[in-house]
Amino acid sequence: MYKIDAHNHPDFLGMSFNKLIANMDEQGIDKLCLMPWEESWIENNLSGMGAAPSPLSTDLVIPFERCLSFYERAPERFILCYAPDPRVPGAIYKMKSAIDTYGVKICGEFKLRVMLDNPDVIDLFRYCGERGVPVDLHLQNAEAHPGGPGSPFPHYWYGGDIFTLERTLQLCPDTKIMGHSTSFWGTISGDDLWKTKSYPRDPVVPGGHLERLLENYPNLYCDCSGDSGLWALQRDPEYTKKLMTTYPDRFIFARDCFTNQLSEFIDTLGLPQDVLENFYHGNIERLIGE
Image (tube, rainbow, N blue to C red):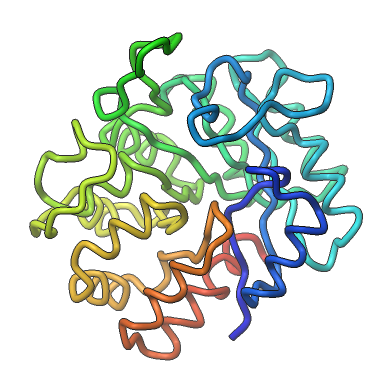
């Protein structure tokens, strides 16, 4: 089946251009969305994951230039993404240039220590909506991610919580938003574990915020990447199957890693063929106009 990995990064955890192409071929990935992470190195906690700063002369974790470098060597395999920091003046002009000059298709990964309903963020997201460019955002609640010993921050948070996301969906009704990470996927369950646990594995309790938001906001989509997406979907396979068949146009295959675990799990659910086609490529193709 044709597959588009809708969320991944160049140079991430040592994945060079040649290694990434080989990984895609090995796992049957036809195309991959290349996302930068334009956050200052000192603001993130990737060092705990065995990562290292960019070898370029920049303090950004993964600058857009690295995405462009991979894309220019194999444009038939990659889809360009970009997400400027809206706290820096001129962010919307940078986004415009990325779209008009380089053909950027997604605003992402938006992973910054700024609240999603900040007025500057809303302005950027609304501009993306006007241009037909979806936003892929990282949601990480502060209380579920305390800083460890020696950490420069008491908490590692990004974007706010699920209620911040809901306000953003309300303020940007014409912008397609793909939710991702722990405090997005934790709300698949109707309990409150997402508030204090980064990766809850308990059985799903009906009535979670995620299902409520899918029902009430047609501009919300689910980026299923990372352990946060996989482990949330694995909490109750029957519930996951029901959710994906109820909202077949809203779940998107993505890895944010270099394993095949998500595909292996999804393929055990017995989903209808049309739901699988949407999940693996159809939904992201419609979002980006491929």
